[in-house]
Amino acid sequence: MKLKLFLASMLMLSQLISPSFAQKTELLILPTIHAGHKKNVNYNFNHVRNIIKNFKPDIIALEIRPEDLDQDTIYLHKFYNPEMVMFLKEFPEAGKAGIDFMGADVAGKPLPENFLKDTVNEFGKFRLMNQKLMRDSAIVKARIEKGLPDLISKRGKMMAGLGANDLMTGKYDALTEEFTVSQAKILRNTPYQYYDDFQVMRDQRIADNVKAIAKKNKGKRIIVLTGANHRNRAVKLLAKVKSVNLVNQVQDN
Image 1 (cartoon, helix red, strand yellow):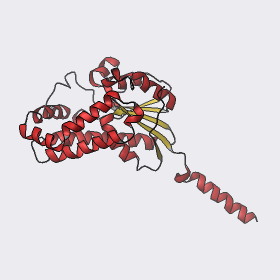
Image 2 (spheres, helix red, strand yellow):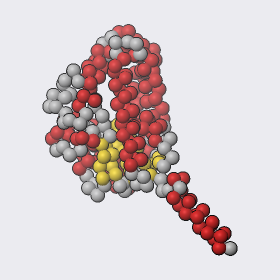
Image 3 (spheres, helix red, strand yellow):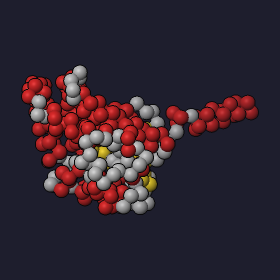
Image 4 (cartoon, helix red, strand yellow):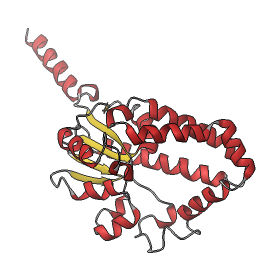
């Protein structure tokens, strides 16, 4: 009898310490629309604030480089979108984490004053390449044939009028995936491939940073604020992590 009780106790203990029985990390990857929050009546800055408040996060992860989290607001507003700076400073009870990446050449260092005008650094080359490819008639034609302008238009309309829940149904993410795949085919082996390579690499780094934060903070409630166009890669990656429960419904009032 004692042996049976002992074995039953050991079984219960093993279940309690087993990863499969451990409390999951509640992870909300919230697609934000940057300056679009100023105009979208269904998804303004106050909706974002209410979502954060109602989710009651232990950690707020933001599209800001980790090395810039302690910078002042003057610096931050030069390089980051408004909702990222806004909610870095709000909700002091929550820990803050950075997920952005802007190039290996500036990693671990403050961004220089002329960072967004510099066309030599990795991020500057990426921005300049976008301008050049949009002036190349062959690339423009290929983009039209692949339906990229139509995909951009569809996403733009969704960002302009939908609320957070409607942006998290998977429809927006599917458009982003379609755009990403088509763009890669168009730019592969052209002088503009760097543009696509950098964009994909940055999206992956953001997703990897989200994963690292989730794995480091198991059992916590984490909300990630990231641009809507970055969300699909992060969701796909984190859906594979067994210790994470992805939250796709929010309360914004």
